[in-house]
Image (tube, rainbow, N blue to C red; front, side, top):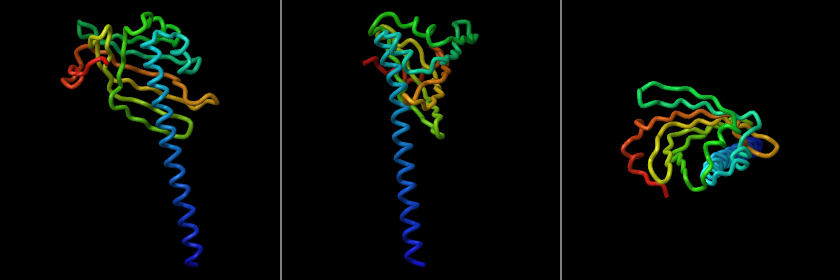
Length: 161
């Protein structure tokens, strides 16, 4: 009986270790797709931006205006690429991302800082819903807050590198 218990315990711990390793791999892969999106935005590479998402990908932006009112925009991937036309002009940094994984779905979210021409433009929160496809993780949709007045002192001190 003791031998069966030992074998069963070993099998369970191997499975748990394997599952934890898979989750860590998925976390790294999902984060890599979001970073690739930011890199392609900085490169003003429309095809590269589109390659990070599913064909149906869309973004919801909640943008705070100077009048204090929020405006909601919903755009598809093709429309999103039109914002990035000058290589090296923008840099987006999500400096402390969080990742949740459940099977073939992942959510990556966190605060970000956005620089335009080397200057702080705005800060906010990004949230990406991702799906595992045959080609790997892809962004299914995302949402972002965009508020120039919502930058913490830490974020204001950050530099575009």
